[in-house]
Figure (cartoon, rainbow, N blue to C red):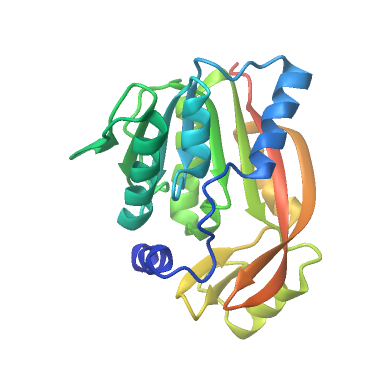
Length: 244
């Protein structure tokens, strides 16, 4: 169901944009890492979960990093592949394992709530930009454990998640169009299930595996069927908990 919803959305967008520039929240995270952690985003291994059309993946790869973007939608990955081909001025060829073309960027079709085909401690950074909201609880448990497994001990994560606190529209959707699981609703026009998080729930979930270095609530506006809707987001900066 979620595959079909996202595939239809990328074919005929009602919610996602066609923007190919990196998202401002991602750029702010990079600046924060550089300023506060002296983290240089160069020659790093980066995993972009729910990469969509590659707007963040391609940007990070073009800075001189090795990036893997994962998404469930064939259409989104095809767009990401075409954009990468133009940025790197070379063909990105298709293989059974995903879109690949050079050492900087590769794309893989996969549910981000399933086991990742990567070795332990493979990545310096993981991005999840409003993607894991679509996972069910079982998938979310796998997603959290797998992020912890593949992240290096000194690695960082940026998560942008939908915020329930203070969002009247989200709370109304839970009432009128509830999903089958806790704090979920169904966007009936696109048949997409989304989960929203209270601060308590978000801290509890991610705190199992990660130290929350910064947690900020932000309001933004999404265009849907020609109308503007206010949405609240959590911007979470995370680091892997030290192993005993």
